[in-house]
View (tube, helix red, strand yellow):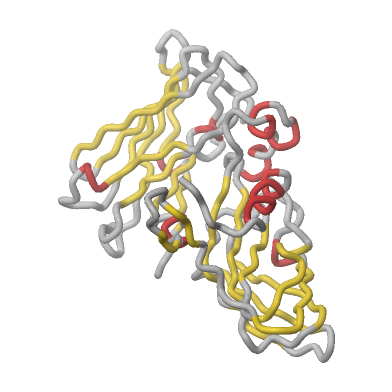
Length: 305
């Protein structure tokens, strides 16, 4: 497929992989006209979306404040065969303080037409969590220079290869509404096991299986012989998710998965998905730990139009 996406998008993506757990202090590009499209690399927050995040530009000239519409909130990940994914010790240790696998969140912003030329900063305010990271995007102003003239929102057009030109739907790259499950540290964080069974309740009533996807978070493993596998089964409103690693070495933080629903489908209002129980097994198939539901935790990542 031949793309017509402007050249600046490619260094953004390349640079982003180098900033996995970091917040960029400059937008990309660092200078733009009013009306142009820019991107911000805002680190690796949990649950950031257009509903719980806002942006403002503050001019250095007179401290005037301008609201910035956030066009899309997108996560990007390194190629699973790249150095960043496999052999970068800093990035591969990230899940120890973010609580999730490697990703970087990009904000796509269409600058308003009324921004004054000159330097300034973008301030982001988000309810998203940065885990145990010492700083997040709320703490870091992002510099931006507004150039003279008027720009235009980037449609990110591309050529399908059949002389058919289409406009990219960036919102289709955003996370769908989902329930994200993780298991609390009910046993020592260094404890390893070979299999886990997690029973959950999902208020879905008559929603068919074809409208449901269960997605395991892709944690990096320093053991090259260990490959974590997942399968799931559903009985009415009860969902059982099984993790297994024949080589062993599973840790609690790896028992993280999302239940994603097809657009137009939602959980029953007023009823939250819950973890019922968690069972942990050793390599011989013997039950080693039972984590009660009350010792587990669940939370949600929601994108609302």
